[in-house]
Image (cartoon, rainbow, N blue to C red):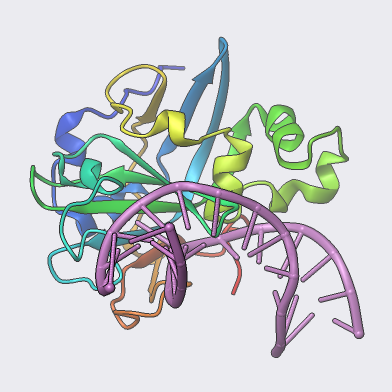
Length: 201
DNA sequence: ATCAAGATTACCT
DNA sequence: GGTAATCTTGATA
């Protein structure tokens, strides 16, 4: 079996919506103390500050969102509701203010570690299997992603993505984004059809 | 200095 | 279906 290739700069520095659709099916990897946590990306949402009122960058650059104005290939992590972190992939060229929220992942490696992080103790994995990473806050908790990871370069080797075959169009569902109040009609949520790890609503 | 809102989740009835 | 939890950021003064 050949080892999948790490996605390079050229993957990320393209149009946000294009990258969002192609992110589905790719493997998200985080190396933590020598162990690997990984999973397949099954649900994402695109945000583009140029036209999209729901994007954090819509009102211009701030201390919080400045990484979104870098060129693609960095991690944008933010804290919300006093409770959760959310994890985004910065895209497109310098100055665009674009990123993609990772909403759900299908766990592959390090599942026991993820369960421990989610529940703070050992649990019956089978029972919570579909509840570990089926939402943006849950993904960050399971993968132990927090403000320390703000701005990480995805072409490095702590957090990165692995190339996978492109999905067929018929495997991708397009819909409106979840949990926002502005620009609600933009069709910028993408998920893998019939995948049980996609967040509900 | 103060304040309102938030790209969510878990737990309640 | 409703809402408490909990705190950072960014805007306004």
